[in-house]
Image 1 (spheres, rainbow, N blue to C red):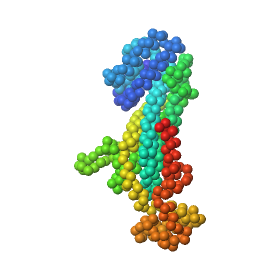
Image 2 (image 1 turned 180 degrees about the vertical axis):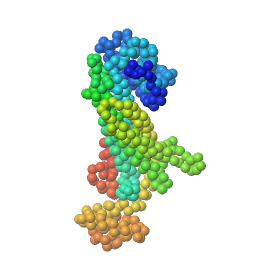
Image 3 (image 1 turned 90 degrees about the vertical axis):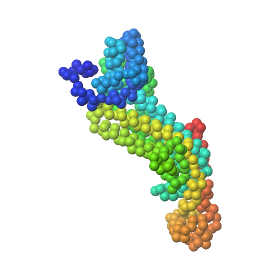
Image 4 (image 1 turned 90 degrees about the horizontal axis):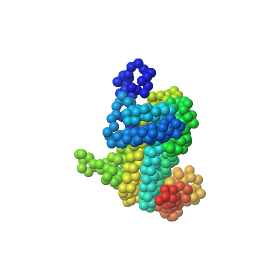
Length: 457
C-alpha cells in the first residue's frame, strides 16, 4: 500500500504511476538519501523516538540497502515512484516495525531537498576542482608562450597586436569569476532543510542542530515553508554551470577557428579530435564542437527550471520533481567539459610563426600610428583621421604601414619622423603599453605572477 493509501478507496491508476515515477532518474540520489536517513535515525534516538537497538537495526539495514543499490541487485519499481519510497519500503522489509518509525517528523518534501543539497555539496566541489585545474593549465600555457604575439580581434577582424599569453589570460579571468559564482552557489546550498516537514515543521521536538552538525551543513533553514519551496540553490548551481559553459563555448569557438588551415595558429591534441569516415585527411575538433553544442542544453536546463518555478504557488508542488534531470545533466556536462578543456589547453601546440606573421602583415599598427601623433601633440581625433588616410593609401598601393616612405607620411603630417617606424613595430607596442591590465609583456608577466600565487603554483 502507498504511504498515503489510508486516504483513498482504490489504488493509483497504472498510467499515473508510470507518468509520475521519478525513480529512473532520482535513484542517482540514493547515497544522499541514505546518509540523510542515517542522520535522522540518530537524531530520533537522541530525542527518544527510537531505542538504541532500533537505531542499530535501521543503520544496518540502510547500509545493506546502499550495497544492494551499488551492486545492481536492488529491485526498482515504478509503483514505488521515487528513491525515498524504494529505500523506505526495503528498510521495512528488513527491519519491520523499526523501519516504520524512520519517517517520524519527516516529509518527502524536506527529504528530497536535503538529498539534492547533499548531492550539490559534493558535485560543486568536483566542478570547482576541475575549474581550478583548467585555470592552472591556462596560466602555465600563458607562461610558456608569453613572448608569442598574435592579432587580437574585434568583429572577427584583426584589431591590435597582443601577446598570445594575454589572450589566454583573458579567458582565464572569465573562468576565475566563475569560481566566485561556484563558491556563491556552494554557500546557498549549505543549508539544512530537514525538519521543515511537509511545510510547517513538527510537534515532535526534532533536534535540527544535531542533524546539521552530523551532516556538515553551515546552518539550518529559517522558515519551514521556504525550506520545502526553495529551489534557489538549484538555480544558483545551474546559473554557475551555464555561465561556465558559455565561457567554455566562446573559448572553444576561438580554438576551432585557430586550428583551421585558414588561421593555422594552433594544432589541437590528436586525442581530442576525430577523423572522417570518407575523407582521410580530416582532423575534426569534435571535443570542442561538443562543448559548444552542449552549452545550449545546459542553458536550456537553467531556463527550463526557471520556467517551472515562475508560476508555482507556495509551497511544495509536484512540478518540483522536474528539477532533477536538468540539474543532473548540467553538473555532469560542465564537469566533463572543464576536464576536456584542461586537456586541450595542455596539449595544444602553438604555431608561433603563423601567429606572428598574421600580427606583422596587417594594418593593426594604425593604432600606434595615431598614438604616435597624439604623443607629438596632435588631438587624437585628428590623429585617427591621419592614420586612416595612411591605411587607405597603403591599401591602394599594396604595402604595409611600415613600408610607407617617410616622405609620403610627411605629406599626411609634418609631425612624422623616422622614429615612427620603430614605434609602430608590433613588438614595440607590446613593450610600450603602460595602462594596468593592458596587452603588454610587462603587464602579462605581472598577471602571471599574481595568478600563480593565487593558484598556489
